[in-house]
Amino acid sequence: MQDELLTIGRFARLCRLSVKQLRHYDEIGLLAPVRVDAGSGYRYYAPEQARDALTIALLREMDLPLAVIARALAAHPERRAQILRAERDRLAERISRDQARMEMLERLAGGGLPGYEVTVNREQERRLAVVRAVCTPAGIGGKFEECVGRLLPVLGRTGIAWEPPLWGLYPLDLEERMEITVGAQILQGEGVPGLESEVLPGGLVAETMHIGPYTQLPLAYHALFAAIHERRLCSQAPVREAYLVGPAEAPQEELMTRLIIPVQESMA
Image 1 (cartoon, rainbow, N blue to C red):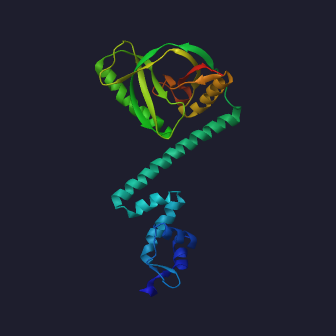
Image 2: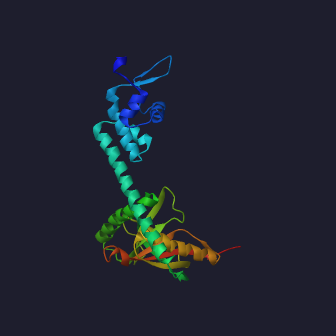
Image 3: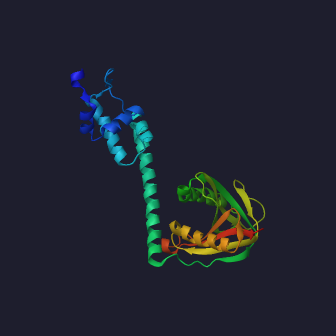
């Protein structure tokens, strides 16, 4: 049996891994040798372990975490496919975010920080019919669409009049798990059966207008928050976005979003 086993050095060369990596994978229980010599501590591997070792090397080359690789190797084929597809989706999401960052950097490199006019006004009270969801910052777009898909059919069935645009309500700080709210302003005082309601109080707000893709909204928020701080105002939640021109009405470059942050005079 021992004659058929491979030393850790030979196995590492066969599987395009380093000896250090194999020792680490043994220590964390990802890929254990079939035999460890009691006297010398030498590790020996079976040739049939090469497939798992090569799979680990391939997935590490794709930057998959070791914990995910361990779950994939231990799973049955159907579950393994689900795990790998979930990682594929996360990778696609990361690529999308990186693409958005590249576009913002290109815009900044071409003309510096874009100019946004920030004004301080008084906003009227609004009553919204709303739906809510919890998501990560990266998942806002998908969850927003899901919320719209829940909101508009209910409004349509009830026949209650509402006034465009759609509104998005967000916390001041984008945390890893946060609640977002999507709403429509209803024109009558009572609520909408099947939907929550939320009153946006009137009062002092700072606002600006963003024209362009939603992925470049951070540029507008940069200008908006900078102006709030410069004017010695205090930001209040929730942040409000009014989607004056949405994706169904215009190309990405012509989307129009009104950004509104309630403020109050600083006590300092």
